[in-house]
Image (cartoon, rainbow, N blue to C red; front, side, top):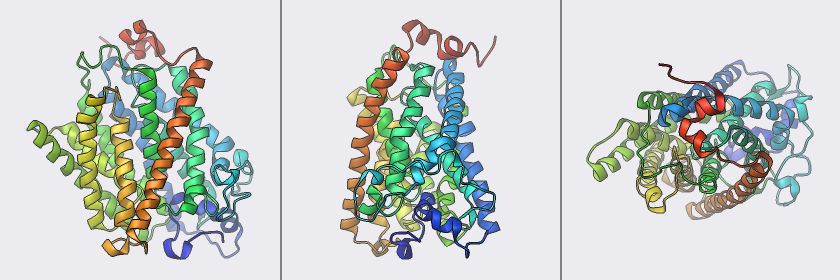
Length: 442
């Protein structure tokens, strides 16, 4: 089997199994594990729940009432489009290891090939690490579906529906799929060969989506009236319910990435929960120190900050490290949203960069610290050396996603006649002007 550092780390994350897919799928000794399979089916449903209704409610509650349906429509449409493309070519671009060789950097180190287009190789009995490959492919599809929609939080309330859909399709193809291949594709993958620790998507999902959101909101410009006109959440309860669903769904996201119901999955569950709880406390403490009052939306955001931070680390760190990571991320994300955004003046509508970008950076870097057995983690790595590897991975992801996102936004604008809705359309609201619907009828 082709699995670098497999004896020391096991399956690094859900997609780590991709590095050995052909061997695992065909090996005679591989047998179906019904317990692992049942858990992976549940995990797949939990991650799907994170998109709709989780993210849709979280984002929808925070926009103005005239735009809530546009958020739901975007989530459903983008999710549907990415799901189709995952079957057509996305799965293949991520998993195809043709031409990859450990220590050799070539085109195959960046993106997979097209050996598995349309998933024509699948049959009912094909296995990956003891579970049906069909289940594994569906699980990874949900990751691909939700990641582009995280970006939408940055440009909410002002981007044309056609532009949203086209941009997300292009971004999935040119940004998400290559990053997933580089980080999780096995020997010969660029970030994999660097030795990056990436359990469930710190760089591939959160940093990439966060920096893409920042670039998008800078390219589109501010919403009309921002920051002089108050734009509070129209339904905080919706946002809190969405955050709660995201918290629950995150167990599928993180724990499911072990691709088994085993000890690593159990530890991922504990560290995920610990970091989320610590994130709540970190955010609320920072909020109290700055404004004197804790807020419900702040508590929910703190939980998400902790969850984002622990995502790359959950299978590698211990409970103590998870608490520190959640606490630090809660504080860092609060100040990024409360102070950095205002100071720099960008309009990240729903704080995709403030939560996912900053939280992902904090989490990825601290993974290099707390994953070490020297501080209660489970990886035999030198902290300084691993921290440098994590920093390289973060910087590469920031640069790659920023450049690619900017180019794709320009291409999208060219193909759709502009990214942004008209001033009149923005004033009316996207629900009525773009979809001819109202969330609340008189």
